[in-house]
Image 1 (tube, one colour):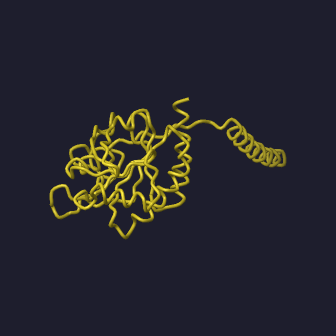
Image 2 (image 1 turned 60 degrees about the vertical axis):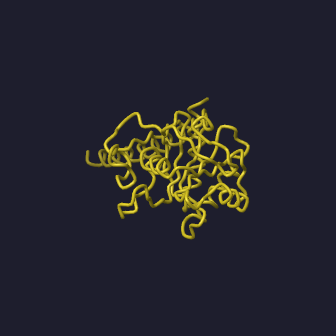
Image 3 (image 1 turned 90 degrees about the vertical axis):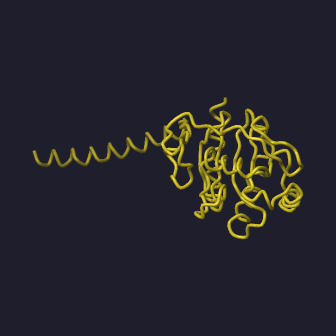
Length: 223
């Protein structure tokens, strides 16, 4: 009797192992679709979120905006209507994480340059320095494709509000100075409904690969 149960135990282990393998194979064959999360303020590190919306749990979207790009053109929410886009915050004189982030944005740009559904949007956090001519010089130096990627400047209060109340992506500088902020390495994936669908470390190559993969996942929602 003991021998029977011992043999049955081994059979059960082998059967369970084979079942897991078979389910995994079937899952990969059929490529089961898993939608990306929709990020709400309550899901994000409170350091990145304005105190007025830290507990919001639904319906969060990127607010309307009006900024100016490297060519002196007005860029607003209509520029990105029905587009998936990757957003970040930077400044042209940054010597720490920005060069790495920009290089990674260039990689993303090159990967999506033939994709009409996807664009890029970079906001300066030092608009007093990053004038249109300064952004244009930076864009030329970095190989920015104007039709795919807007580098934008504008009213600092508006940029601060976008960073803290829409993209949930920057920290305050801690000095109490109005509208001052510390940009982070965050890249944000925004869907066609202006919802945040992913956060990525813009200095990390593996996160950039994940971002490109998740753009493809997001595109499945619109097929």
